[in-house]
Length: 176
Image (cartoon, rainbow, N blue to C red; front, side, top):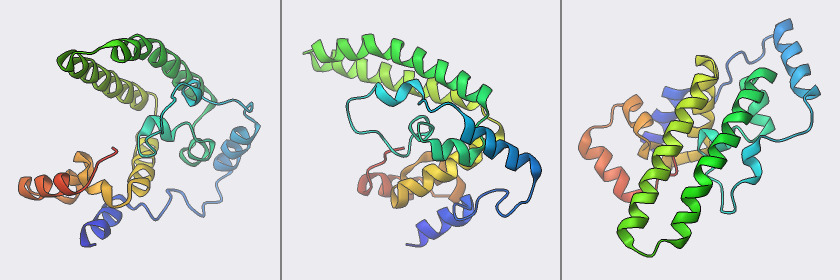
């Protein structure tokens, strides 16, 4: 329980940056987000398995999250293009995974998919402003709940020791 409180204190997940602000720029950004064509990022239909609701890429599929972090139309287009590239690159690996029978081959493909996902998250972060990344990570931590302490970023932020990290990772599944 104390760990969860620390996570919330460190990340400030309970408050939104700029909350209560009467800034004209924010109002215009909200109007642009509301006027954006009713289309989803390319990734919204690419998965046939349950989405990880704490992954930054999956959180960006939510129009509510897009609005919350102030995603611009240009950023939307850039991230949409990244989603399309990710889908193309991962499709071949997913087909190989489906056909692989050898456990070592499957493990290698899983590792390649993990690396691809990590590269994807790095690319997404390059298209966001630091305050957008910060808010996106706050939302991810909030969605993860107690599982957030198993995330390396959260563990660093709250100063968990290696034994504490090992203990947490054995007990809590991480969807980070």
